[in-house]
Image 1: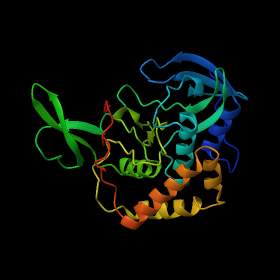
Image 2 (image 1 turned 60 degrees about the vertical axis):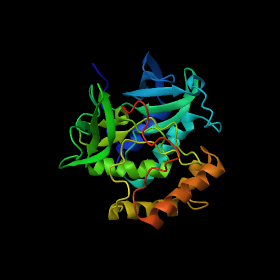
Image 3 (image 1 turned 135 degrees about the vertical axis):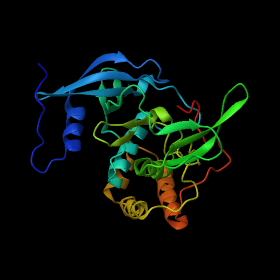
Image 4 (image 1 turned 180 degrees about the vertical axis):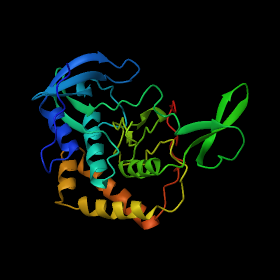
Length: 278
């Protein structure tokens, strides 16, 4: 019989309960996700009668990246979660940094999104127009000299994620990193290549490129700017995870988004779409 689900104490959010479980619980490794480029271990975490599935990415299992020499990817994953929480959108599953069976690593709450998580969010269509309810990304080769238009859904959840990616400078927003949960929420995962000081934004969510930010996004960015000020709690916590120069770059990107008032466009100096895209 599975352990009873623990009910959060009054005034304690489910995210806080999950974070305590992930931080304090005992990790039991059940297997490895083979297709991942770095070591990604599927685990169960248990604490005081509660349990959950989670992903554990030990630092020692990270493949070195020449353009991310400072710190490690696990700390960037935790930093991305903290920024997501500060937006109020909750777009990143609960993520902690802790010791595990193979040393320090990132531990993240597992989101069960089915076999094809990007289903309904991405598509390839014939012609040059995306159609109602879709946003065009780019033309893609589909074999035998044929091309199709890559599109993503004109979905407010994706639009919020596009703003978060612009803030954290996500260099790897693939289709498989989009996880729609059964409760209707959308999560993004795999944020190890983020927070670089140079423009590294690579994403499948370019459909709003150059369009005005929503009023909701503008208000969130204004709040983020305040929380990133020197001495503010978010800035202090991020300062423990990324370098001072990278933290300054986050502030700069938020300020630029507010100043320009539009979704960013591809820089042209870096591939704008990750490979493979899904």
